[in-house]
Length: 481
Ligand code: BG6
Image (tube, rainbow, N blue to C red; front, side, top):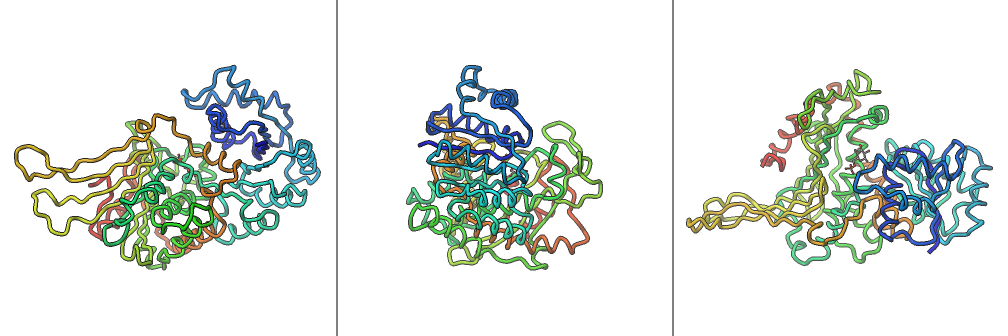
């Protein structure tokens, strides 16, 4: 299948840090369809050869193991082309159309890896230049909007040029192998589904913890905050994958319809419930992994009086028959103790314990990061001679060992899906808008709240109020168990 992949923002961070290494891996694994061209678009003038050298240099910053040999890079680089464009000029889009039409590839993927404020301009220019035929798909990278009205505005402009099935919204968490395994686990096994409900599950915890700070992104981050950066998208997408009903088919819209229903069933926040069920925090100086690190307001390009949250923990419920009354706890933050992303499904304890030590309940841990894996925590007899003494043990599945194949990274998977037109892992506009609708009362309550975020020491697990919130229900965060 011939394809053209156009990367708007071709010299930007996302392109060289994530997209190019992912495309290189896909090519190296022999998964990139033959007959492809990758066209990087940016403002300044460069030749193809200069662009290839630019990417070769940048690849030095890519993880050691994945670095190409010189000869390998040369072969990959033959796919790379470059085009200077002023994204506000119609004639430049006409030139792009000519370039694309001259070959007439079967598939054209336009990846907007630019600053989001350019999305609407680019999409309407693409529409006016008729670069929106049925073979064209446009990929939009987050952040898509700053709140519900701005997200709706972007979607409206996108819809004027592209159909819903042509517009692919990326949430890179959906490309992570562990997240695909979540569907496989639930809908590929008969074992879990009967337990996947309020009668068996006590609570579900989704933690997306990062040990890094905001780095050089202070400017962007300070306008964004953890709620918009991680909760509105990544955490809520994981929640939908965990909580959705089994879809009737594996078709993208069948899946996305079910995910949307979950988002619509989330209990809406009120100003009172935001105060009670949402904790926001901001890191102060501390130490992570043995090194001293500055506080958030000491980071580059962050105002000293910033009230932006770098941590959010919240409690919600899904108001339907399957989940009524089961708390879902979502937590994310920067400069926490460890890089650790996981979903913990805590089952209810046995109804009538007859063995000493039977107090601990079973749990299923779906690990996303730093490695993906699956742990099922059970109680077992220790075999120490005291016949009925129980102790917790875990069935620990390491996918690397189980499958002996290199795991495909999130961007690699999503780029290949975009080229192949597989839409399952992309977010539909109604899902994205519903997620915004749900977080809006939190944003509004915070605007009214004079207290601002609570501080937490870098290297901790966030403000103590986060543990207190979950303790109110008689539970603890997984790492405190
Ligand atoms: C991005 C956020 O979407 O996800 C970043 O903008 C965050 O702030 C990143 O660091 C985390 O992604 P990952 O894959 O490293 O967990």
